[in-house]
Amino acid sequence: MTPEALATLAHLRRARDLIDREYASALDVPTMASRALMSPAHFSRQFRAAYGETPYGYLMTRRIERAMALLRNGMTVTDACMAVGATSLGSFSSRFTEIAGETPSAYRSRKHHAIAAMPPFVAKVTTRPLRRAAAKGSSRIREATPTAAA
Image (cartoon, rainbow, N blue to C red; front, side, top):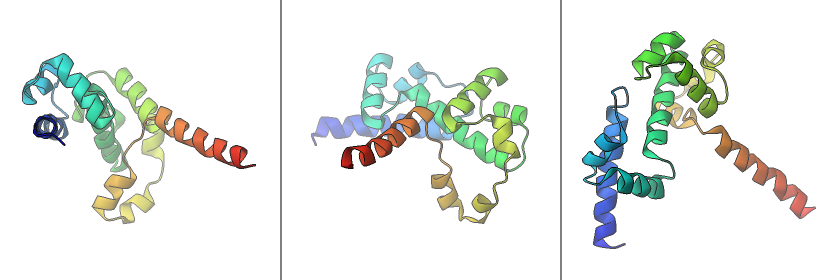
């Protein structure tokens, strides 16, 4: 890996750390890009190439991940929405459903006993949300494998 590529990754990590720390604040791509010392367009391209999703997509995934933890602990959907920095309950619910595969209220009402018994670091990895499109894509691959082998 070239020194320039390593420097780019270091700058991108700085921006990703900003997202992880400040997910509840009003972050936009220009703010994230300035942390990475890049123009917004170049930053978006580089971030997607490095992490597989857009900066805004990463931000929303982090917000939904944090909201899932709050909902598991009994917080209301509206309070969780506001706590993670979402300004619209409707948009939050739509994005939550897109990423988690179920509505926030359905997720909140479900029992989460197994997660409560896990060490926090295991629970964080286990409950990390995956976009439904990615999950569907992986299941199609699994479905196609037995057919191809038959």
